[in-house]
Every structure is written in structure tokens, then in C-alpha cells.
Length: 480
Image 1 (cartoon, rainbow, N blue to C red):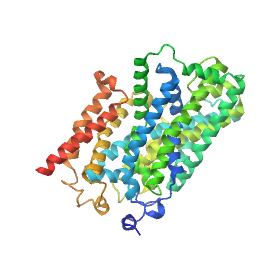
Image 2: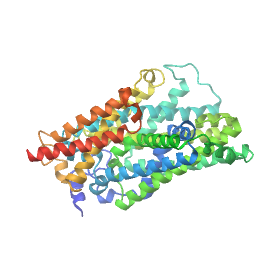
Image 3: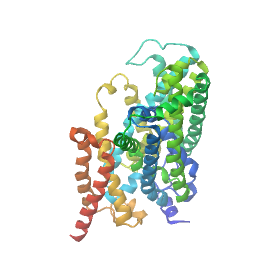
């Protein structure tokens, strides 16, 4: 029995849905191999937004296809490096992100970054539930030919039915615990790839073999200069790093379930650069095929499916879009939200209770997204919260690797009344100062036009500033 198992037993287990969502994972519960880690990233990439984003990179940035591919690979390698760093403590000690944050921020101070991450996650969880419901509504319309009837708050009766069913489906998965989450991710990831390959084959046939020729024109960029290619390369890397920024912070929420460090590292290597290459190649081929068949470059896969006028393809695509959206919702939104909410009152809020709280917020946010919330310019609010999280990454990494040499006291991480991580009434003043100083810059990049040129890299710079500031304040505090 390991020390982690001792702490795990002392805190009552973690995979019990009625148990504390933050309890450490014991060795008997660390069951995720490299393929499960791989599918975390497969599901994180395979959303409708992810497809549109990748497809647009080859069209909107004014660079050749090979430059875009090189940028995607570099971004994948960088993110892989970052999550290996942030996920190491989770894999070693079986702890989630809010508990890891206690080491650097304090047992009470860690509630701040945890709830900020949870707020962002809850919002996007509700929105993604709505987007997943549009796939189910597409399926119902494809099968029945019904229009949906009168709109209520911007949604038809079919839309509302689809939304409630998808909302309930999410509850069904998390109610059974993390083992069901793992199972769904392992099924959804490969399934989406199979359907994308099928869509490429359909477009190949309809393009009379001209798909590769059309794709080659997207790769060609005869007017591009060295400087324009370099600027496009940097912009694409920044865009993709920003896309994965939130998961980079809380990757220990998933790495804690990895069998061992090798499974985590191998899963991240296969899951990031490989998924970026495969998914981007399929998105590019689909875009090229659509350009031949429909006469224009279409970056929205739902529009491609609609133009094929195939009921069968529409049904398959609806199921695929549903699986892809639910997959990314579980990875990027649900788990961070549950852990962040549970961290507010660890002894009173179980995994299921935190999941229900998340779902209730999602019911309101997703249900009113199309008619009200999307019109409020809420993205600025959410982006601001996301920007404030950037310094936390740097603070945690510097604290864990530089100041603690990868050694944590597991008992004290769960001691909310005392211990070495209690600091000054639960707050580490050095971390708070570093967080505040670096967060000012991160938030400024969202609202101050002068910092617009840092778009995409504001998160990285904020993380670096957070780490440097924390190192300075922590050393000064130690000398005092």
C-alpha cells in the first residue's frame, strides 16, 4: 500500500459518486491508460467549434498549408509540455487541480482560482449543452421532417425537447461516476474520426477525384512572403495555445486517474501532436472537397452535411456532432466545474451534489442562450475570468518544481485548519501578491486595445509573469 492509498482511505475514497469529489485517487482507482488520456484530447479537439477553428486556419491567416501544419504541430508540442508539467502532481499524488492549488495559494486561497475556473466552466458547460441539443434536434428533423412548431424564448418545441434530453443525458453520465465518463470518451473519440473519414470519402466520390487537387490549392500560397508566413505561423500557434489554455491549468483533474506517469506522457504525446495532425488533415480534406462539390470553402461541417441532401448522412452527422460536443463538454467544462464547486465546501458537497449544481446552472444558461444570454456580450466577462487564471498556472508550476522540488505533504493538503499549506489564515500572501500583479496585465490584454497584438499569447505571458512574480515574493517572504 502506498502513501497515496493511506491518504485516499483516510478521506473516504474518490470514485464513489456520493463521496467527496476532491479526495485523492488510490492506486486501485488509477485505471486510465494512455488510450484514455489520448481520448481526452481527441474529444477536446473534435467539437464543432474545433473543426471550424482548424479549417479557418488554412484560409483566414494568409499562409501556406505547410506553414499552418507546422504551427499546429508546434502548438501541440507546447501544450503537451505544459500539461505534462501541470499534470505531474495529479498523477503522482492522485489530487485534482483545486487541491494542488492549495500548496501554492493556501488552503483558503485556493478557493479563488478554483471558483474562477469553475465559473468559466459552468458557463461554457451550459452553452455546450445547448449546442449538443442542436445536433439532436437535427436528428429529429431528419427522421420526422417536422419543422418544430412555434418558438418559445427563441426555441421551438423540438429544440426544447432536444435540450432537456441532452441535459438529462449529461446527468446520467456523471451520476454513474468517472468510470462512465471514461467509457463515453473512449467511444466518442474514435467514432467521430470514423465519421469524418466517411465524410471525406463521400466528398471524394462527389468531387470526381478532384479533392486532392482542391486541397493542394489551399496549401499553395504564391503571394506569401517570409514575413507574412512568420506572422501567420505565430498567430496560429497563439490561437491554438489559447484554445487549450483552460485545460492546461486543471489537467491534474484528469492525470490523477492515469495508471502511471508513462501512461500520462504517452497519452499526451499521442493525444496532442497526433490528434492535431489527424484532425487538421481531415478538416482540410473536407474543406477542400466541399470547395469542389459546392463551389466555395465551407468551414462549418453542419453546412456541408446540409448541402449533401442526404438523410442518412444527416442522421450520422447529427449523432457525430452530438458525441463530439458532449465529449468536449465533459473534458473542458464539467469536471473543472464540479471540482471547483466541491472545493467551496469539501465536506458537504459530494461529486453528485456538485454535478447537480453545475447542471442547474447549465439548465438556465443553455436554455436561455439563443434568446437572451448570447446578446449580452457575455464573452468579455468570460474572457476576463479566463485571463485571470493565467498567472495561477505559473504560480503552481514555480511552487511545485522550483520551491518544493516535486514533494507535497498529502495530509496537509487536506488539513483546512492548519498544516504547512495553511499559511496566514489559509492564504499565501506571496501567491496572492503575484496573482494580483500578473492578473492586472492578463485582464488588460482583454480590454486595452494597445495589447491587441498579444492576442493568443496573453495567457502564456500572464503565466510567465505570475511565475516570476511569485518566485520574487516567495523568496522575499522567506527572508523576512
